Amino acid sequence: MRTCESCGREYPRDRPWRCDCGHALDYVDQPVPDGGPREFDRDAGIWAFEEFLPMDEAVTLGEGWTPLVDAPAWDATFKLEFLHPTGSFKDRGAAAVVAEARAVGADRILEDSSGNAGLAVASYAARAGIDAEIYVPADAKAEKRRRIERTGADVVAVEGDRQAVTDACLDAVEAGEGWYASHAWNPAFFAGTATVAYELAAQRDWSVPDAFVTPLGHGTLFLGAYRGFRALKAAGWIAELPRLLGAQAVGASPIADGRHGQRAGENALADGIQIHDPARADQIRAAIDDTGGDAVAVDEAATHQAHRRLSASGFHVEPTCATAVAALETFRERGVLGPDEDVVLALTGRNA
Image (cartoon, rainbow, N blue to C red; front, side, top):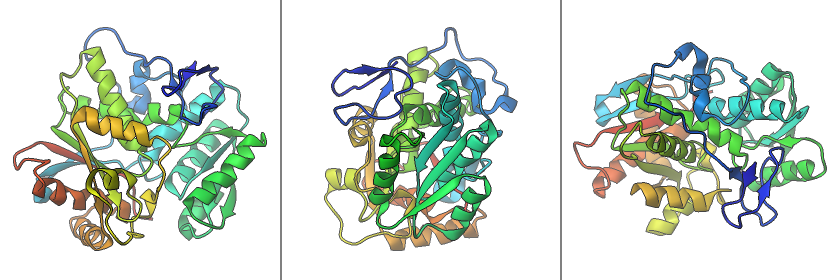
């Protein structure tokens, strides 16, 4: 079953994304394993954590167990989420949402994306033998669009902003053209991204850092991590939640603006987080409050500088990742992060 935390309505499992009141849906229950932490088979990818996952079968391309690498120049540790089969952390969610689609008998899935999520969903759909239709902005990076097309998915280019792309995809969903495998709305996707928390804790011998930093658009990784850490705490495998810190792009920073005031300008370089109205904004704010976290807006100059510095250090990631790196300095300047605190930062997508 799926439920709406806003109004309490419940829906059957094949309802993929939104309550009649307009709020996102979630699973009624979060599976929590019995007993203490154990050894996990890394060859099983995210499905090593099947006891935490609410779907009944697996679809996999070998995602998960991305490396943790010391980054002393930043006084942090990087989790290399760009080292996934399709080049981004979205593979975690795509594996889970496509497994859910197969479990409910969907024969065609739809997704809207600026690039990474679309490629991930299309790739895992191809792996599962399910048709896919991906809605993308007309000005999406050409190479990302070609990669989606090479999976065999149908690609629909939509003129206008990111919201126009979502609206066009939703029109098709409402017309009955397919099952919505949304990385922003579908709770199965967040069940998949929650595996980053299980993995991170396992890699650290069941400890968590003081803070976990991610780029923040729809909150796909941010909220997934929050749910994962909460499940670990409910299972008794960790004692405390890390503070969750999000980096948004100036001009598309509703969470940061609500906390610190709106900054002028825009940061088009961080194209992966150009989200003005996150589908789960209330849940993102709640996760920040619950963990004592924060969100800041990063401008284009800081993103560019951080991106160049990452490249010069051997981390060949897309510019959106650099927002989280740039945000580290801001968090430290504001005292959100102390000088000796243990920080893990997710590098979320590979440079195309």
